[in-house]
Image: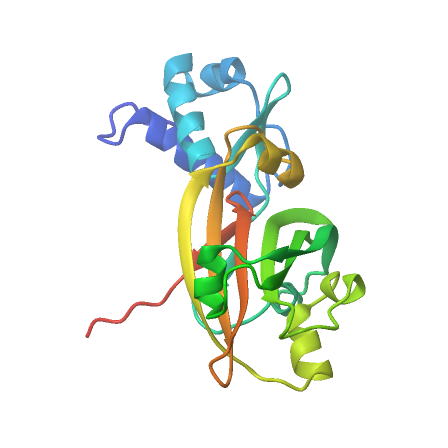
Length: 241
């Protein structure tokens, strides 16, 4: 199981063995793995070596800890290609998952200087502020804060924003969504984000800002999203030019 004569570090061999057991189905998502003491006895290594392997796997999102309970296998991450402009609803449906949303707030506010610049409008002009928690198959995936000019979609309602705004724009209003610019960075969740995403404090999250435009170039929506890093990852095909 562990080859102490191998040039590969023992903690790395333990990682690979646990990953293989997850791949084989010995450990299922949400299963608790054996304790450090038990793994130390199994692999005939020190608890410090086991701890390094477990810490590495937690940092990679393969495992997660719950204080006072133990270490568990993370659910398989949803892969989101960095190409094509789709809504969260469309992304989840394409993967055979059931999307849903919890509307946290739906207000009209005056646009800040930054929002006004992005919407090419006057500062203080009314925009909808929409905060939603997004789910896939009932599991929390992301927090979304969306902003849309009131003048652009004056009849927007709570019922509409509880579903897919893209569907409303394209199927009800018969307008075409053209393109978006997207920015992604990693950060540590704040306490309020941890609570809404149902993750331990100080967990890693993916912050995404998307600025979306209608087909005629009109800035339509600004969305700031925080995704669970243990359930979501982005992939991209890169070609040498």
